[in-house]
Length: 253
Length: 381
Image 1: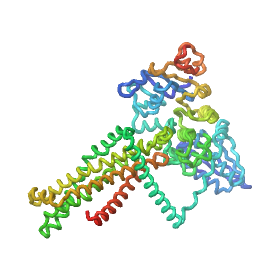
Image 2: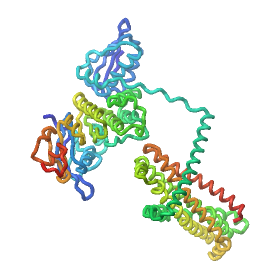
Image 3: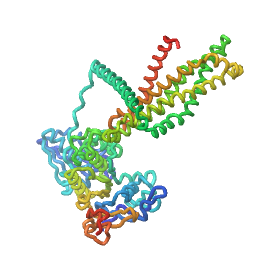
Image 4: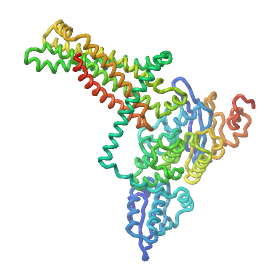
């Protein structure tokens, strides 16, 4: 078994008096494509925000590459942050910059590469996500799917070891979504990037995921963990069965 | 020719050797990564260009690792050479790196051509004036639309969004009391003090009372208040409606068959229109208190100050000020909403809309004030 790259230990998080997740523990191993699943409001996004250090947990630790992101400050935090890239659900592109400028931003800030090189690499990343020809468009002029792909290109601008993707293929047409899945697989196989993906798209999940966790609102935590193809055939837990087989909650199993 | 970026083992290095027949061999060594390529990239490209190769052999046997930057570098070199119609090959690249280069190293799209040069001076002037008149037209049209919608609403007052109106009026009015009072007080103080000095030379400094009372109640009170309302409330209208616009909320209202003017604009304009005269009364009151303080400090009893103020001010003066305040408030509210609705795409557009709301409002205030002064002079009010 490959060594864990992210270790979440007894994570409890919430807002004010409401607990969202309680005592959640799991590992993400190097090079795998790890998928976080769950219905609306189960805390997927909250979990992701904790993993990338935007929010502090109530209790528990999150170790990324062995370093605790919840306690890190200053330079240590910067080092942890530079080990991963994040692509947000809505893209979160800077509206005042063009697509290519958005991708160039981390390259300019964090490398000593000359301007030619930065432009070349940024354009290459955009081409990789299928956006050649749209480099000089402002985010507002791009469609939602294009914004998502630009965000992915920006997230992987510096070839981080880990990529966090929040709903990467939601809102994309089936062909583009399949291309994106293929790209994720290639990046994972060829460059050894570890992916942590929050998604609902069952097809993507079966195509991509090496391992998945399924969160549930009432359980305030993980109700299933494993390879999605195994989980799909697991009939012991009705909630898991319903999720993977697209059954409405009312239907009895 | 051999160069290394520095002496650490983690650095990238290259060497260019030329054999006859203009075959150039570029030897790369070490890691080709984001961290290591910074100092080497340009130097290496220049060295290759200076060697003027007919064929370029890139020897990558000593390349240890290669990430996105390295792939970018190799593809950049290949694209350069290809553009000059020379041939190039890479030898000794490890198979997995070769596969990465083939998958991720497609040449980037070329940089787009520079945008065409700007318009000539005359064309620019024409464009600017066309934009200016279009803008004036949009303001007049919007004004008419508000009046029409308002008239229609007056026939069905129960449809008016009273709840929104009261919330907005509280934010625009009640919450502005402190700042309006403070500014009115300071203005009264400052005008009284600065006019008292010259008048004292003639021994008539008590007439400061008459001067301040007239200036404040007829002109300055409404104007200062309207400027504060423009900065506080007009900008807030533009920002709020602008944000709604970029979130498609305005579109949603339209397709639900709700008129954004009656839904959003009317309550806001009415709120601004009604609170501005009320705030003006407050500004006037505190302005008179401020100037009274100066008069008192010059040694006159307050009774004398008050009798001067009473004798010089007529009800007409107060009403002129309040009518102006109503119009100012309406203008500020209208411009704020208009600029909000005109917001273009993107987060930066909200900032632009807000700025434009305040700037246009202040210009309109000054213009209206000018028109009023002339009008009142000829009407002898």
